[in-house]
Length: 124
Image (cartoon, rainbow, N blue to C red):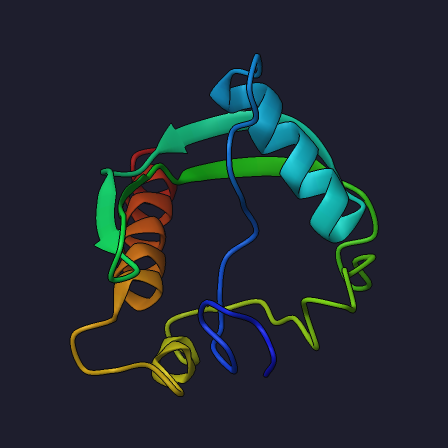
């Protein structure tokens, strides 16, 4: 609840690309820092999303990935994260908690990812 951005809101694993780092190195680093998991592969990149914090406009790149590690018990950054959950269509509405009506980036992103995963499953 004390975070500057998105206090009390559900968010995705992620962060920023540091100087000298490419986006996939950043993805690998952020996944490990925030969960303890190891990135094994990237299966899909979602459509870019754009948002601003009132001062700066950001482009957010999101990926569907495969990871290795204890999926039921990630190693969370407890100073920044209080809990985690896996989201399916039955629980996606929970992502709207504490978000403004016009701030549904996480909700929209998860719906997009679920659509992609469903399409991948049915095309096999």
